[in-house]
Length: 285
Image 1 (cartoon, rainbow, N blue to C red):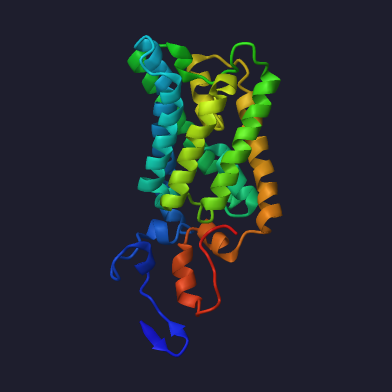
Image 2: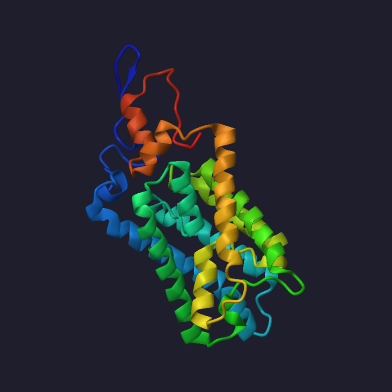
């Protein structure tokens, strides 16, 4: 609706594909309301559970089926799962699914540090539940999908590869996410595609985990902690390097990104305050 010369007013949600009377649920519109934090934490538990069921489950099923899940399928499947998760719950919790991603969002200034412990704990719970389910269904086969350096690959080499892969992953996320939330087609396709790409070339070297929760859970349930430190230190180091690169490329996070980090939809806030010519974007720039 045009209110006057140079003024444009749109109903909340119009540009997000909702009708003018379809308000966002309160846990999406304002996650600063702590009474809705449980929804976001449940979303992280569920999303990480589904991711690890696929990422760790693929090698487990391959072992059970005597080689019916080839390596390329094992690395593409998690990327497709992350893509689906971003579409169906990215608006609730941001679909972090990964402690390295949550820590990187906080280091970038997009996500409150006070919410980091809850998100990381939720991710570890979801991942562990997935590994327990795999063990209950199939037994302790295929190392329960644990990520380990490939044959002849040293832990140091695997560490560097994990850091490099996570640097790329977090760079993609910071460049496509809306503040601290993976939402929309851009984030889903870019993040899911990158995860598949990383696995296609690096899985034989390090397992292409890029996710401490995904590696922690099989190690915990199987009781096999060989080289697990690689999958903690590598992704965290890579994520923090990506944060530094984001500052070099784009400077500090935008106002819209900080609004999104606090839970509001950036587009809605900008629509309420922006006049023609002021520009603005819901992405971290």
